[in-house]
Image (tube, rainbow, N blue to C red; front, side):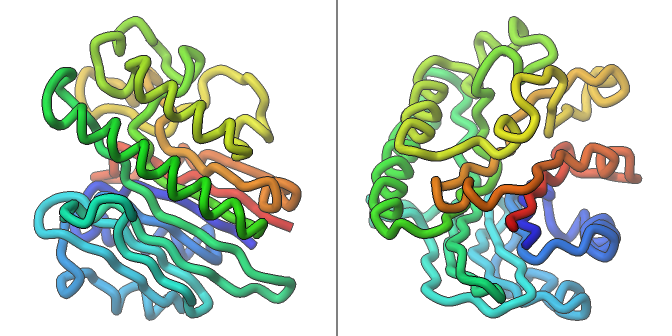
Length: 260
């Protein structure tokens, strides 16, 4: 079972790119982030023609998450629990059946948090606290669980080409990084690190500015965290970096795992 995550940075602007990649890679489940459209404007038909069912939690102009799958979802949850007043579309979760069992999958678009010291940064921290609380509850199900998405967190200096350049950015602050570790310490495994160890240069995002892609000046902020039951099934994890060389690409690339 192939499960991927990809911040497409506007699904309508990258529709041709997305269709081309899906046609080639053929993942079973795809978590998308930063759709930048409401549910009704999501180009579902283009993905349905490829055999995918679309589960969407959209928002006009900003945010938005989706899960595309070759099987129909069950037990759908739109929105991260813990704050009934939160209107930002950043979380969607569902259960998917496979020939040999089921897996619960969430598509996550964690807040950016910049600038530091602003309400946006406080929102990022509180959102992460809610995610930790929700994940702790999900682990009690003792089932394969994949929390996939754009976490907007650089976990360690190894996850940036030039970590010093990110010292004043919300993505690399002690608070978010500590919460990311707290999430892992619940029992989650970072799929890329599990398969590739402490290898340098494993990036998923390159800014559009200053020739970042050409200079490989990237960061790793797109992650798939696996529960112990999912980690036991992990066969492979890959960053699909070639997608960044497409015309008019997203600044993120897909990350895909294979579960046995």
